[in-house]
Amino acid sequence: MPRTTAGRTAGKDWIVSTSSRIMVALAAVLLVAMFFTPIWHIGLEAPQYPEGIGMQIRINTVAGDKENDLNNINGLNHYIGMKPIDPDTIPELRYMPWAVGVLVVTGLLVAAIGRRKPLYAWTAGFLVVALAGLVDFWWWGYKYGHDLDAEHAIIKIPGMAYSPPVIGSKQILNFTAHSWPSTGGIAAGVAMALALAAAYLTWRRPAAAR
Picture (cartoon, one colour):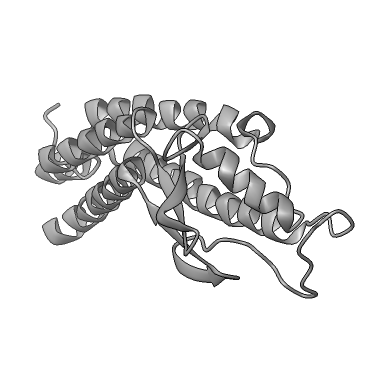
């Protein structure tokens, strides 16, 4: 028995447009940049460091901008009682490659399948992972800046905390700390914008047809 026009229209409501599928595929491919470029950058400026020192947060490690930058940052942190920044003690750096890898593979699958529900689920999962990563980054900086070894600190200022900003700039003693997304983080932000745009256009499409 032939399908009715209404039935064919209802079936097409579940199909994602070609442009949305391309956006999802591009979003997944952009996430690959996180494996090869820094995700975030924290820099410090002070009179004693006219060229500045900084560190790059990568998908599986933390490294200094220059060869000795991370050691210099840890040396400065020692004076105020902060724990050293040791990539091997940060469990998130072990999980992040897997989380991003799953997003890349599933994103490409969603683009290939071209159905609404998988697209919505993938976009929601992407959003949850991104928000969880930002909250975890804030919590990591908060702990490092507040959980101090006051007994052995050389510089002691009651009530002072040394957490860097999640994003933006902040004055910490005689240092100005800058925290901004780097290449991998910017690529992830563009990927998120593409995913949300694809989901929105897909959601609008059936309503426009009606």
